[in-house]
Amino acid sequence: MRKKISKLQIFRRISQIVFFFLFSGLFTLTFAELKQVYQMLLNGNFNFVEALPRLVEAVTLVPITVFFGRFFCAWSCAFGAFNDFIFLISRNIFKTRYEVNAKL
Image 1 (tube, rainbow, N blue to C red):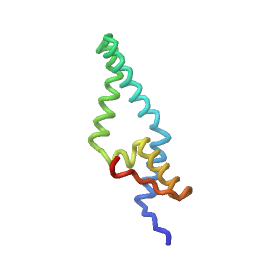
Image 2 (spheres, rainbow, N blue to C red; image 1 turned 30 degrees about the vertical axis):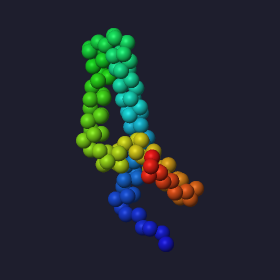
Image 3 (cartoon, rainbow, N blue to C red; image 1 turned 135 degrees about the horizontal axis):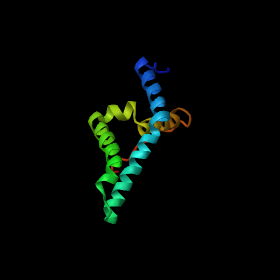
Image 4 (cartoon, helix red, strand yellow; image 1 turned 120 degrees about the horizontal axis):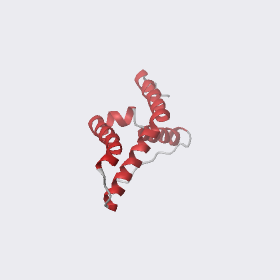
């Protein structure tokens, strides 16, 4: 017997698809900018004026992620959407159930 999919689940999947295609570059760009700031600190040539645009992006996206937590990852995070799609493909097409070892 097939489980009925709710309207909320359909809306969530649509939201994930939209955010995955529109904003996946935003998250990779944020991590690249954080890497640049980290390298500036390690190399000893940190200049606040030069690093400010990189810091603004990180300071806006990281707190949003922390504040909204699971809601953000389930509805608008490109990485969360990618994880859900991989899970759906493995469960529905390959019929595998991936479980993490309890000791891990």
